[in-house]
Image (cartoon, rainbow, N blue to C red; front, side, top):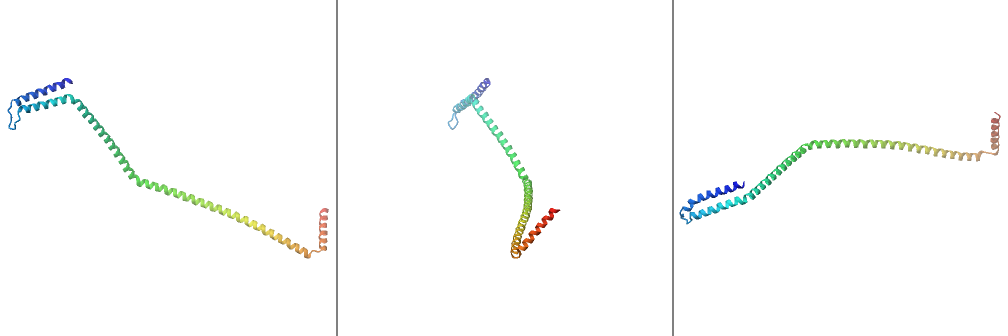
Length: 193
C-alpha cells in the first residue's frame, strides 16, 4: 500500500514537470506575468497537494469515515424513532377508533351496576319496611296486652273497692255467721265423701 502511494506521487510529479517545461519556455504575456512564475505557482500547488495527500490523507479519510458512520448511525436512529412514532400514532389512532365502543361498554357497565345498586337498595328498603312492620305489630301487641293487664288490674281494684264498700254497708254479723257456717258445712261434706 505504501508503494502504491509513493508511485502515485512520483507519477504526479513527473506529469507536472512535463507540463511545466513548455510553460517555462514561454514568453511573458501582456499583463507582465511570466510563464515561469505561473509554473512555480503550479509546482507549489502540486507539491502542496502531494504533501497533503501523502501526510493528511489517512486522517482525512478517518475523519470522513467516522463522520459517515456517525451520520449513518444517526440516520438509522432517526429511522427507528420514525418507525416507533408511526407505530405509536397507529396505536393512538386505533384507540381513538375504539373510543365509541369503549364508551358504550363503560356506559353499559355503569347502567348495569346502577340497576344492581338500585335493586339492592330497593330490596334492603323492602326488608327494612317488613322488619319495621313486624316490630310495630309486636310493639302494638305488647302495648295492647299491657293495656289489657292494666285495665284488668284497674277493674279488679275497682271491683274490690266496690265490694269492700258494699260489704261495709250491707254485711252484718249475722251474715258473717251464716257464711262461716256454710263454709264449715261444705268442708264437712267434702270430708264425708
